[in-house]
Length: 157
Image (cartoon, rainbow, N blue to C red):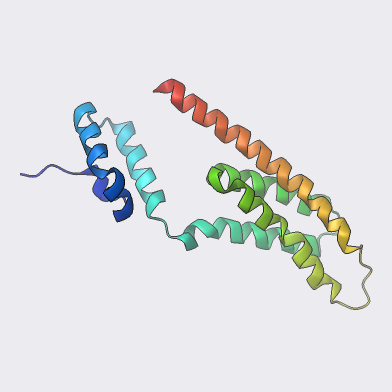
């Protein structure tokens, strides 16, 4: 009878690098229910394709661009930038700067589209650079929260 290898839940590249050590560690320490849930959750996240990982960024980008075009007040797209940058940073901490800059791009790109509509008063395009402020505020808060979660995890172990 063969034993179950928890590393088999992870992608092949991960298994190749960490699999034997991971299984040996689990065999020595055992697998309580909370650890099993964590392993399943992290294995599912590791198996997500790039398209699935990029979906929250695309959805946030579309929301911010739409609010930039449709909202009469600047507070709506700014709030969406703060919340989206926060959420994306907590979701994928290692790509916080890349996601924040891509998210920021929703403002000037949607503004350029908006400028093509004749007969509508437009603000100067350089004012869209102000959108960097809420994008980086949200990302900074997300970094602080995820760093706090990491510190709590390290203390608990």
